[in-house]
Length: 354
Image (cartoon, rainbow, N blue to C red; front, side):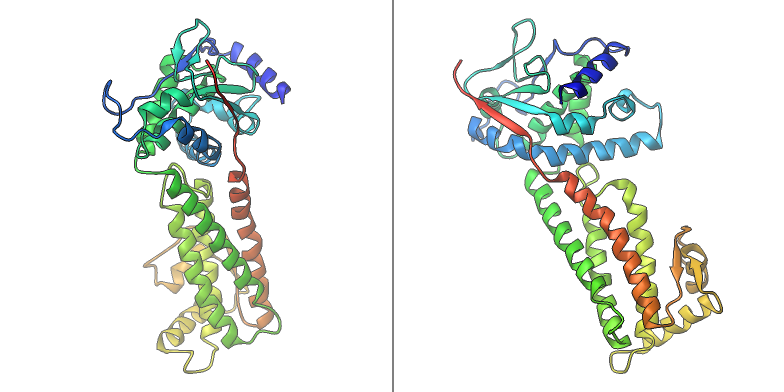
């Protein structure tokens, strides 16, 4: 653990930033020097701090995705390109939560948070000060912004740069909440479990009627997962770099549905299924595989061309439907991997006394 931060310290010393561990951060209560009518209290802050780990990881996922689209736009690439990444620091981070005192920076100034603390892997957050400034409405955004502020100091950010990042965090997640994040996490977990269970149920003993019914349900489950991704840009529970994969897989699901429902018995099969199966058969013709882009171009008469080189397998037998289902299930595992990274909490040590 300490070796990670030793590497980070050496890296920071070689950057153009001012040495950061002498700085501390503060938050705004949203009303100037006034206090909220219903402050969350130090106990509320202490309870919240461990659960910030997942939202903070997902925030940096979004930041990393934006950085990759516009390289060199800002100094935020330091979180992802150095010898120690932000995710390694988050994994090792500990938080000292002072319940009856302010944190202190290296000069002894009282602050809401400080990266000038021991152990090296830790930061200090004054639950005492935050608890009196914040309420249930703004505690999540402001506390998360402050924790990221202090983490950035470990990457060499001076107070000006850290405060700018903190303001960006608060602005980006101003319409979000910890409850929203937890809700999206649980719904995504349930959705992925349903998707995997449905895909597993498509096997060699299935018939076309059963596969048709399963893929209709699969489409509904996958649409739910797709919708959850877009509930929040900055604290999404799925990496934004995965969105293309989710969108591509919708076409593979469409292929299984069109092929199976087109071969199902009436009344399960309706006129739409007949029409879709005809378009599906014309798109594949004599091909065994097609890219999604080629298939979508023919299937939609060029009305909805989805640019993707991901392949679709022609579903002309139960076995081919099983193979395509297995491929989808394997790809769904990467979304489970995202959710697994968001599990766990910060190690927080409440410290009372002055």
